Length: 185
Image (cartoon, rainbow, N blue to C red; front, side, top):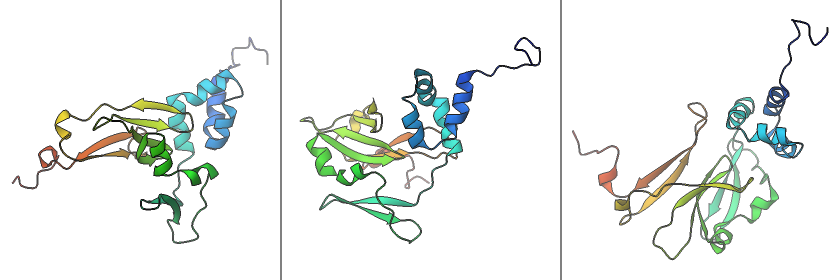
């Protein structure tokens, strides 16, 4: 069939790359981003990331737990079987002491993203979301100023069944900021 034939359909090459790359494991996609600028653009696109998550759902086989006293990290299995190995050898050196020496306090991590604040001479510092794989980060707006006299915590939330977006919650020990007031009737 000749290219000028009315029934011949030309599929854009970036659409083909999108479909192929979205079905590959994340580690392969990261390697293939170096192949060409087109693949880098496709693999960095937010629509691609959503499609990749749908085709490659995360399964939790275990989790990491840090002992705050010793700053060591241990692995535990979800199903009670053998504890999974730390997937990346560089994670074995990840601990609060090394992060603190770099001026970073790690609040939480979720699906590879890390919620952090910088340590500074100021009483509070702005949180930021870090992707350690790409070293990209995004600053998070400061909580309201009236939270400063009390303790507050940040939580990183992600539920792919409802949305492919991450959420950050700021919880305060100040009861006047509670979303639910148990004293109300």
